[in-house]
Amino acid sequence: MTAEQYIEHLMGEDPDLARVTDSIRAHEMPEISVAPGYGKLLTLLVSLTEAKQVLEIGALGGYSGICLARGLAADGRLVSLELKQEFADVAQQNLTAAGFGDKVEYRIGEALDSLTELAQAGRKFDFFFIDADKENYPEYLERAIRLANPGAIIVGDNTMLRGRVYDDERNGPSVQAMRLFNEKMIRDGRLIGAMLPAYDGLAIAKVR
Ligand code: SAH
Ligand code: MG
Image 1 (tube, helix red, strand yellow):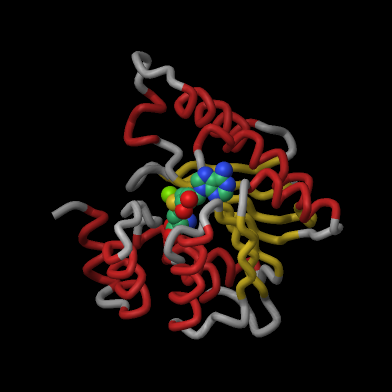
Image 2 (cartoon, rainbow, N blue to C red; image 1 turned 135 degrees about the horizontal axis):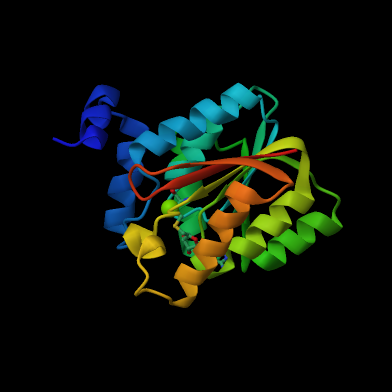
């Protein structure tokens, strides 16, 4: 057993998240939801920071959406950006089934376009979860910093790219983008950041 498996065993059954996993398989969507232990951490971080406005980039089937929504207070809201209407429909169904249908707003299309619209509308957020196309992570981070309330938290998933990010032989566009993202999350003067190496890696930063 691995440490990750042990922790998942401790966490036990979760019918709302199991429904997400089942629906992702049924719709033949990619099985790339956030890892269970990191989903639990998302709930904790949203709750800990008392974030009212949460922004997720990459909805898929709503697994991380449910984890984020679970941490929200009564007046908290989640905006979720997703390229594919079919995926957002599945995510919306799963959030509704989990009791969070009235807390989430999906915006369909290229996340960069939605981020531009949110900025034009003067929206600000307290918490960001970046988990869409890896090539755009550095730009998503810049947009998140611009949309951030002071003290906002930014989390990025899959920061190890299954080991490719620290493999000198791998230099494709996703790898280069993730290296830049990770450097900024750890070293950028606008942020206080840290990196968790378990699963596929998770970066967490606070906007100063
Ligand atoms: N956060 C989800 C998993 C997201 S998987 C969870 O943990 O439950 C990545 C998602 O990003 C996919 O649903 C994919 O369709 C979406 N995506 C990929 N490129 C995108 C883009 N350019 N704009 C918006 N969404 C995008
Ligand atoms: Mg991910």
